[in-house]
Image (cartoon, rainbow, N blue to C red; front, top):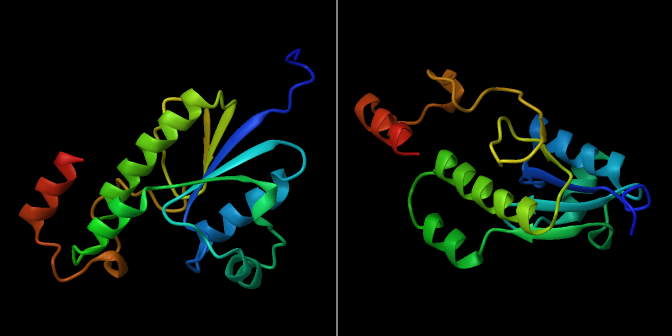
Length: 157
């Protein structure tokens, strides 16, 4: 099919669509804006419950309007056994999957709705607080954020 007739493929990475918050709201509304006009794939950490998303953000998203991708359930279960959110590691896993999807599916544009992304493809990024910025705000700190361990963890990702 000629390039001018092909619908553009967009990969949207909201990370999660069920947690309340600004980045999640942005992800939901990006999907609302794009649905119908583009071939949209969505990459989330886990399968979202769109009834929660629609109730929380006033959207009208349906599963069949998008192509859905998630991180393998076995990996999610393994990481869930560790008593930490491992946000940086989760981001890297999502970025790796997004790189694969953008390459294998011929994606024209990637849109990240949860801070910075590096997916090896043209991208629009919504950054509400840079995840790589340190020190984090006090609300993000937990008891286990010991400076030497945090430094080691951040250098390994």
